[in-house]
Length: 362
Image 1: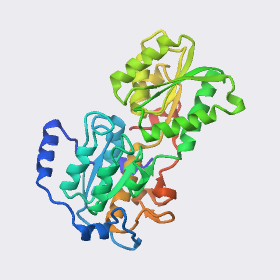
Image 2: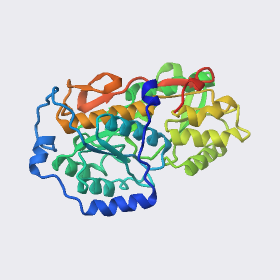
Image 3: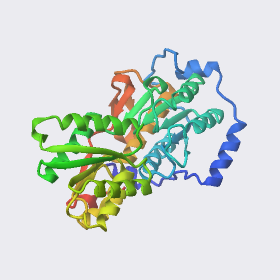
């Protein structure tokens, strides 16, 4: 955690419905970058060489596009990203749809292209649904960074991953196994069926369960709350009523785990059914203190956004191209080496429980 980053005054641009409509209308009159810009900024199909000594351009316009505009976790991520952009003397903003459907982000990408943004930073609802629009953005010289939930590899230049996907998936099985004594039925409450990050983690969770030490744990269902609070609440209720001997729910989504905790906390299942997964301390604090949840995990989402903001600025300035082995200079986070397929990893997640949750404020 970066205390100095948290102390800095941030002015995240929250988009209201009226402001969003105005932004979309204004975007229709914008111009797109020409073919020269595409060759300068690494559009798809253009081979580029990074110049690590190139200065970060001042006045960059960088837009952050979450899965949905009202997702509290991604609002925190984007807040950190906007802070990074402003630190680099650019302008950052957050725009996005009110729902997390597969194609809901496409119109926003098209508008950001029309607005002549220098970079788009996106958490993709569906890796393939957004790919054509993102490729068009790169062809027009706009740098594209994905974070949290990746887009198709050829539809972005860099993917900023919160932690190693395998570690995230396997660690959640280890956490739930410890809490249920290594035996019993478990269910997963995920986000959307097409969410890249969720599906990757779930595959590693399933693989982890094939190990001999988990032979007495049975994954009976994967449910989807679509990263919607009310639907996740209802899915939790349905899981517990349809599987009477369910021992635990693992929810690798901040929206899902908080909704599940809210339901369990005021139900007869409190203290009987384990809940763990990925959540923010501020969302989960009351449920840890009232005994609904023993422990859960997450990385610092503000740092994730900060790293993505620096990656976008470095791409737009020609410092990096997303090639494996390049080094990103990420301000207060130090340096990160770009891995295979343009992946940059923030770092391992933190496990939160009653002993340390009050040490964190995000």
